[in-house]
Length: 228
Image (cartoon, rainbow, N blue to C red):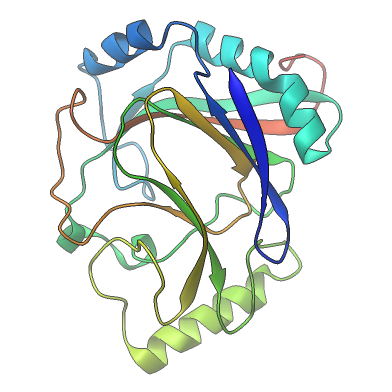
């Protein structure tokens, strides 16, 4: 593994970048590409998903636990709350409004996202809300942030039906990461982020050639029984 930690935006939020993260990535890719049980299991994710192998999820989290604790400044166990193989398949004109702007997974600073690319196209970007300066959505600021964004949308109109991939009237990109096969990004789910998808994006429903990844979500400081 080759790893680094970037500190992005005004918040200096840590993002861990790990290349060659999984020792048998080709076998994992073949497993993922051969799955026949993808389904639209999330209201928020713009595509389809299926459960990742449990031994993979346990193994990759165990191998990265020390790095995650040090870089994110956390203590205690890391519990896996979900681990799914994901494929972006939603056409831009079918995106619902909240999929057209950067999102956050949780306001809980102990909620961690581990994004493992099994493709070499696209990526992930992080954003700042221009008028509030929000990069990390906290529980204390969440209601005000949502009210402000809703007011701006009412005043300026709904964002166009496309993926956000760069600066927009409401949001400024603060960091961009390209996908690379067997690269992982690890970050707090409270950061505003979105997939990198160009304006001319045409969804590819073939896992072998589409935007394929494994998304594992962790809870830091969990009770005993999580990944140690």
